Image: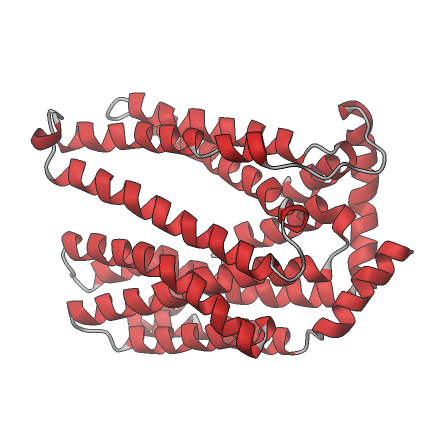
Length: 362
């Protein structure tokens, strides 16, 4: 809920990198601190997890908002896809190392698996800090037309936030896209978050679930880039629609899953489309919004992204409880892809881009 307001302040201050660093530090410190939480102190673990999530989510607002400033209109889809692709391979490599620590703790000098897990949080914090350095040193942030102090930016930020609600009404395709995005990304995030729980429900062994998670990470690395090339041929909006359709098929296949190899096959398919739908959604949105209000508009984008995976799990829980069948619970997620795809179909990109450019002139 803080996201649009923070974005509004950052737009007024030319403060995207400052806010990115602040939230990244919050996430880095709280993630690293999980290493020091003793067994049984779950309240501290929950608090640190919440603060770490706020740090990650907040940093992403300003990271995404820098995208229109570092990539030309022609290359923005590729740059967005490359960012997600490298994120998957980076996260995957560290995840492999963490899993090896957990599975063979003595080999790596840990007393037991619990110590290895705790140290994994510290390794994530260090990794996060090291790979935040290049953006802070090398990425140039476009300056706001009228830079101002933090105090004045807060005042102006509130005003701009209310103005943005009016702007979204004027830029009707932004509002339409955000509504469709909320539904289909909710479906994507539900599958990401609930897949392991579904595997546990089907009595798949823990090792298989870890292998499937690793498959998604490493398949998503080339998959995101290849899907960007595919979308370039058929159009970005059509590419997202294809990915939504693919997720619909994945959901249907998940309903009938019985064997472990089915789980692996679905993990492979998710890896093929997950990064693509995320990257292209981010870049297509950049075409529909005024560039001088990028952080604020990406604040709304990220807010909806974080509110996603709310409808899906709730829908799954209600349907599963009412029917007593977890497979019907999974099937209910299909409705999110259908609704999101239908709404996206009615987003006219040519008119949307024209409105964004006319807004700039205005």
